[in-house]
Length: 359
Figure 1 (cartoon, helix red, strand yellow):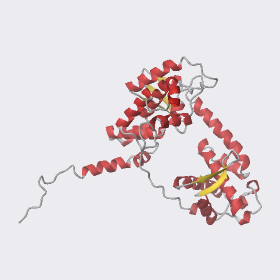
Figure 2: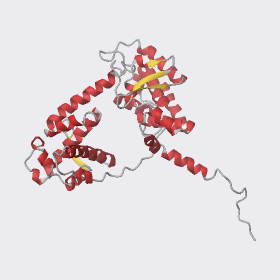
Figure 3: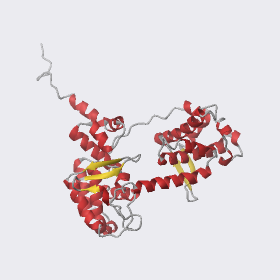
Figure 4: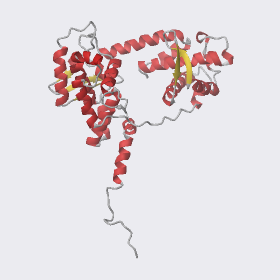
C-alpha cells in the first residue's frame, strides 16, 4: 500500500519523541499529548529538540534555576520565565557549542529561520499551559519573530535541465570511482531525476512510491503528501519511458524484507532514502553547474518555474506542487512576477518617436 513508507516514518518519529520525552520535564508529556491532534509527528519531534535546548539553557544560565536539571523543572518554574530569558536564549543560539550526539563537541549556528522555529516551539508550549490556566504568564507572546528575508529562488534553466539528464545518461564528468557504479544505477537515476524534474514532487514523496502506485494506463503516480493526504500526479511520455526502463530492471531485483513493494531501491536492495537521493542529485548537478547548489528541492523549484512560465497560472502551480495556501506559491514565484512587470515597462510604446522636438 502507498502509505507504508510514510507510516514507517511516522512510527519512527513517534518512537524518537517518546525517547526524547525521557529527557524533558514531566509536564511536557501532557503538552505533547495535548497538541497531538493538531500537529504532525515531525513537527512535535522538532519542538521536542528545541524545547530540550531551551530548558538546558535555562538550567545553565538562569540564576534562579541554579543547581537544577531539566528533570527538576516544574510548571511553577516555567511560570517564572521572563521575556529577557527567551531573548537571551535566542541570542545564545546564534552560535553555541553542544554535543553532536556521538560524544563529540560540535559548533551550532542559527539564523533567522532557525530562531523562528525555536520561537514557534516555545510559543506553542507557553500558549498551551497559559490557555489551560496552568501558568499565569505568557512571555513568549511578547517575543518578536525575526524577519525572514526571502532568498532568491535557485533553479535550473531549461538547457541546464537537459544537460543534467544528459549527464545521468553518459556520466562523462563523473569521477572514475563514481563511474564504476553508474552502470548499475543509471536507469534508476534517470527515472528518479526525470520524475522529480517532470512532476515537481517532494523528495519524500518520491522515495515513498511503490510499484503499485504507478498506473501507465493514465500515466499517473499516486503519492502521499505532507500531512498524509494522497494525490495523483500525471506525467508525460519522457517520464513514462524512463520509469518503464527502470521498472524492467527493478522487477529483476529481489529486495530485502520491508522493501518488497518499493519502486526505487538502493544498491543494498532497500528502499532508497531521502539522503541518498539528495547525494545523487548533488553528484550529477555539480558536473552541470558550479554556480548553483542543486538539491531535489531545487529541481522542484525548476519544475514550478517552468510550469508557471508555460501557464501563467499560479493556482495550477500551487495545486500541482501541493501547496495548501496559494500565497506560499506566490511568495516563491514573486521574483518571476516582478520580472514580468518589468517587461511591461517597455511593452507599450506611447509615441514612436519619443525624442524631444527642438524649437
